[in-house]
Length: 266
Length: 350
Ligand SMILES: Nc1ncnc2c1ncn2[C@@H]1O[C@H](COP(=O)(O)OP(=O)(O)O)[C@@H](O)[C@H]1O
Ligand SMILES: [Mg+2]
Image 1 (cartoon, rainbow over the protein chains, first blue to last red):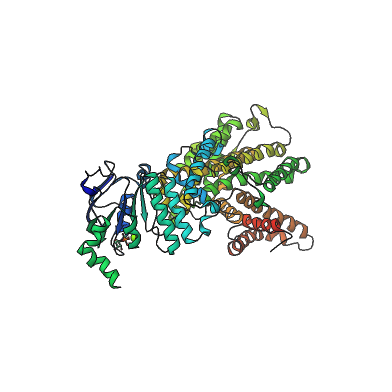
Image 2: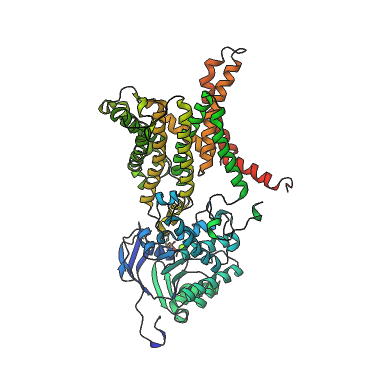
């Protein structure tokens, strides 16, 4: 667990506490409880349809669980609207890229700065004084993200025209531009070739190490998950069947049976 | 060539017209606009003024439909709100146009925000029907306007046509040209700025991906209402200018036909583009004018042609819309871009 080597456990940054979610008769999540600790990479794994995306949707306010609480930095965020949750410092990417397709890379990333900026319709339309200074200041921050993700060459390109791998990277950039305190990534490496996957894993580690951003990562590639995450939560049919460090999870007989075993057998 | 331009700071990179061919084009347009009224007769001045007002309203509609992705068939109604609120202030309270025009625009923005409330729940066709209801409600109120003291039409006294007390006498087409083009230029600058800053980007985000927009912190409800209000502000401006320019207004000018005409303008000109809205306004104003000139020229040889004119004009509108939807759904703005791309590499067209 987070308090490895018998050290005292730090305060969790997010507490998922008895979260249950159903769609009609389908129970997507059943009493899920686990903690996410500050500065860690928390992986969520599990077969398709296990409820991983649904859990992220509950955290970002897109789904409202029928039971349970999600406390972020001490505050229950269930019932808040997605834009309010964004303002608390929770950013995310989507399993099926959800970028602003007709805008440039820079504009997508500038939208990531939305909650940190202030100008409105009037001051923006006049583009005078503060609105202008604000645009330039935030553009500089966006350029830092562009440098970090090595997407300088495509900054003025329209997002819809980019390759799948680059779009995934831009979507990470947009979330990162929010300067989040918690970053939720839904299968950021899905559908990538191994080189792109390596790049993405490197970026995630950089973000975690340099900015100490807490990351919740859904990923199918077990190699990557076991390499880079601090803690792993395993979901199956909406149930949390295991939670622990990668080594603990790997040794868990239920996980071997339900998930790893099947993959090894295949 | 654009590849030869480098920016040494973000401010210049973020300027509205960063490349020198664009700047030259702007200068040419400005010279044309400044020179035109000195050579044009009243007929052409009237056409230019009609285009100018239509362009302001079309830019307004494009904010809502093209940039924010909220379909509205109520724009004619919002133009009516602008025209009649300015008209009533001028006719009943004798207020001059430099007061009535901004007041009417702001009032229309408020009315637009109220009729934008259904956008919180409705999308696409359902929202379109709700805005159609707005259109019909507004026209119904004006049509039963005895409450407001409006008869069949509302006449404005010419005294109110002054700017800071300076009367616009003599050739009204000529003096209104400056007022209308001035308003259009300010509209173009404002809206272009809007869409390179925070609020404008949020509008476009809602159009492109509304779930992602929420998740990055855009409050959908607030921004949709803002889009309705901003869009209606410019409808109000166009309506108020119409009222003072024509001197007499009636609700018949602002029916659902007008709403659909404006939708056609931005579809033909180019959705989500300021210049597209202007091209659309030019196209849709010139098309009937050219057709009626053509009919007049041919009436010697084909005497019946004048009786077919309204039919021909309607048919030409319909045909234009269909042809654009099939061959260039991105509008005149895209055709113009293709021409520019061709000449940018010219004569090396590889
Ligand atoms: N919006 C929804 N409406 C109905 N059922 C849903 C919805 N979202 C998810 N589900 C169901 O919830 C279960 C978990 O789905 P999901 O969270 O997408 O799984 P995962 O991301 O682990 O593959 C699935 O059975 C899925 O069909
Ligand atoms: Mg999923």
